[in-house]
Image (cartoon, rainbow over all chains, first blue to last red; front, side, top):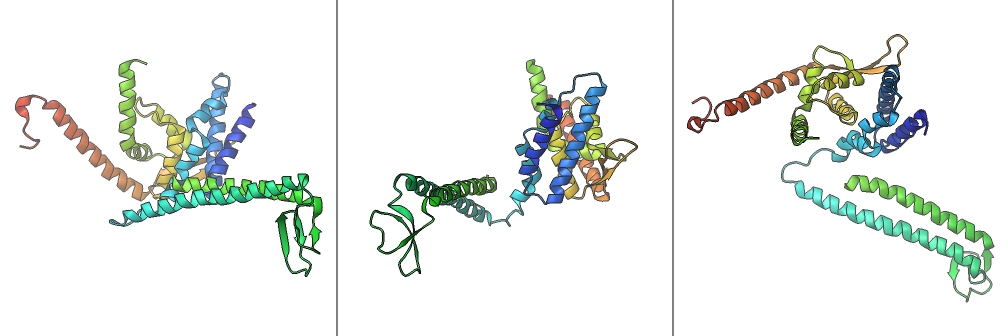
Length: 185
Length: 125
């Protein structure tokens, strides 16, 4: 990978992990580290050595670990008053529960939508979104006994829409879990 | 790496954990330095070879604690650099930590000097 690309990729990753800081604070961190890397690279080149950006980046460590040190104070927050330590444990337990519930719910919905999308391709007559005869309710069915006089909406479009939504929700769940994981660490 | 080198390195790491703040504040006493300059200054001492990944987040914390202030400056054709200098609060903390450090060194030195079992009496007696 060319030097500049390697540095760019590192700073991009760092920026991603610094997203919990104010935007201006995160930009300042990136700007300072970029300035250091470019200076250090110049020193390497001026000393007649072959430039080695990886060596400089190694000094900073993994972007995620470096960013964690910058956001540490945000994660720790204000320490609880003496005698209130138990609250921290309750909070942590709640966060763990939240983490797993969020994962279960998010990925559950995602799997269900993708299953509906795929099943529509194989069982088009039984799966679909139907508008009831009176026109005041919509049903998603998984049955061979569809309500009489109801009209199917979407048709085969249900497949890509359901699969797309499912993948979207899975991605969203993954992002939310990543943020939650940082706060329970 | 020899056993002695490995022992030295472990000792340096342990000692740095407790003294790094004092080291940085002392390095900035009557000096205004940017990150790379500060790092090079520290690297010129055998026991203070910290990494970039340790220095910069620490500078960020010292700035948040108002012990140092930082500003961007561009000199000549060079790229802009972020310079650090001690605040009044930083100077006061440096003095307090320096006194504590000297007290520790004195105490440890006293123990080392008085290793003879017959001189087990506490310091000052």
